[in-house]
Image (spheres, rainbow, N blue to C red):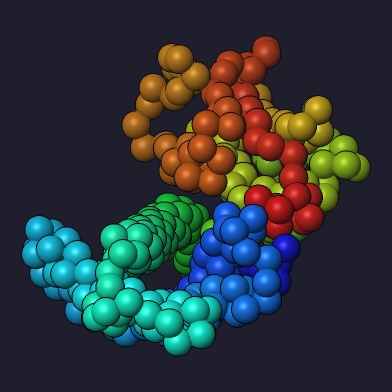
Length: 361
C-alpha cells in the first residue's frame, strides 16, 4: 500500500504508468470486443501494433498540452481538439497501413492510405486520451493548491501557538525578577542565588519545549514543581501545594506549560491576597477517553460568569483557551468555577493521548 502511494508521488512516473496502462487496457478491450471476429494471432498482433502506435504518437501531445495551460479556456479547448484531430488522423493512417499491409497481406482498395473509415473512432479515442490528461492534470493542480493552502495554514497555526505560549513567560519573569531584586536589596544573597538557579532551570525547560508539541504530564509536573520552588522562595510557608495525580494520567500528553499560567493566576489572586497564604491543589486522572485536570485554590474567590472570570488582569487564561482550541478543535473543555468552601477551581478536559496515539493523529 505504501509502495503504491510512493509510486504515484512522482508525477513523471505517474504519467508513464497511467499512459502505458491506458493503452494496454485499450488493446485488451479492443481484442475482447472483436474476439469472435478473428481469433488468429495475426489479428492480436495488429491490435498490439495499433496500441503501440497510439502509445507512441500521443507522447508529443503531452508536451504540446503543457504549453496550452497559459491560454484562455476556450483557446485551450480549441487547440486541444485541433491537436487531437491531427494525431487522430495520423493514427488512423497508421492503423490503415497495419490493417491492409499486415492483416490483408497487401490487398488494399484504391487510395487506401486515405481510406478513413476508422478516422472518427481514432479521433474519439485520442479525444478521450486528451480529456483524461487534462482531467488528471487539473486534479493534480487542485491537490497541489490544497497542499499549499494546508501548509500555509499549518505554518500560521504554529506561529499562533508559539505566540500564545511565549506571551505567558513575561508575566512570570517580571514577577520573579522583582522578587530577586528585593532579595538582593535586603541582603538575602543566598536565597536570591537559589532563586536565580531555579529560574534558570525553569526557563531552560520552557525554551527547550516546542509549544506545538505535547509533553507527558509527568514532564509538565516537573516543570510546575520547578516553578513552584521559585514561588516558595517568595512566599515561604504561605504557599502550600498538594498533588493528586493518578498513575495512568502521568503518561498522558498535554500542551507544554499549559498549567503554569493557571497556577500563577492562583498565586497572584489567592495566595498573595491573604496574609496567611493558602493552598493550591492539582489533580489529574483519566476518565474514559479523556484526561481530566483540576487546579483549585482556597483564596477569596472571584466573580465568575458562564465559566469565565470577570476580572481584569488575569494572567494568560484566555491564551490557554486559544491554545486548547488550536490543538484540539472543539474536543476540549476549559471551565472556571467557584471552589468549595472558597476559592476558584479551574477544570480542563482534553482527549487522553499517549505517545503512540499522538503519532497516529
